[in-house]
Image 1: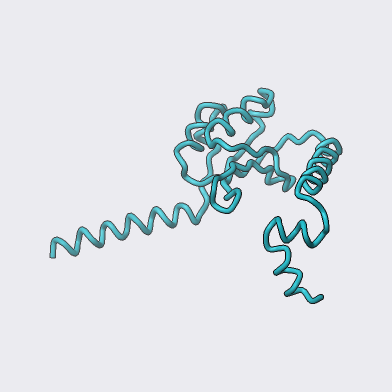
Image 2 (image 1 turned 60 degrees about the vertical axis):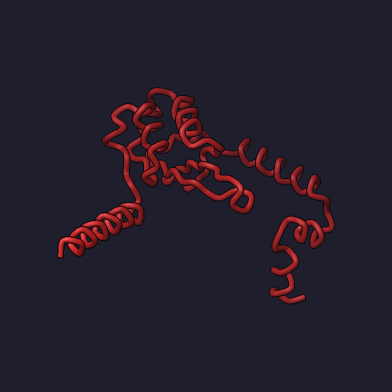
Length: 153
């Protein structure tokens, strides 16, 4: 079997199950045990630089918010609600851990911004927006200026 055939067979979870000869429940049980074992082995993480991003879950049927420690490259928390996810995680930290956070990299979702402003001390000094998001907003602003100039001519 070549790589093209393997990729075709495991394109979705049903192909994955057929390829390994396991039920989806068996695969889910394996994943649960692996995650539990990995979390048990992980040492306490006190991140100073955090990344917040949203990822597609279940083929565009929903999104999850992912918090990662950029120092260790580890996923710190995953949740389904933008603002509640961030607030819950920040509020679960000890005061010293909250103070130790130096930066939070994220996109410009108001829910992300509000959660940080409500939960972290000196949050306005810690927020860092991604370059691609800033470029997107600058591009939109430039388009509006050009459109306004064009209508005046």
